[in-house]
Image (cartoon, rainbow, N blue to C red; front, side, top):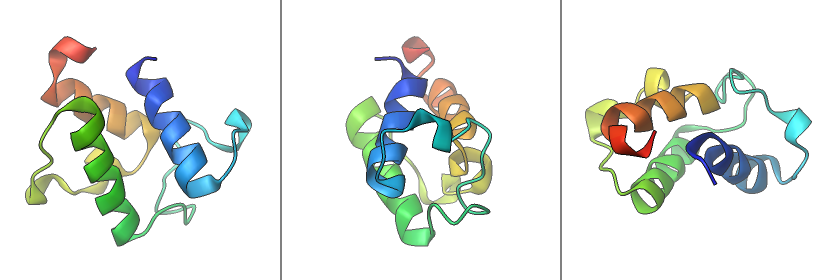
Length: 84
């Protein structure tokens, strides 16, 4: 499974509790839609570290990195270019 689909499935299953792909667009803001809060951001960071073998530093816990599927994909690709 590619990065985008892995992230989409994780968010759908763990935060939206559905497998309906139409409920989440890649550019939907997790914060604006109320999908995650600060604890959710930490959960996503832990998932990224475990699944993709990256380290999410405290100063990287920003909406620019973690606030949508698209932002997460771009962040992972910057951290692990060989995964792209």
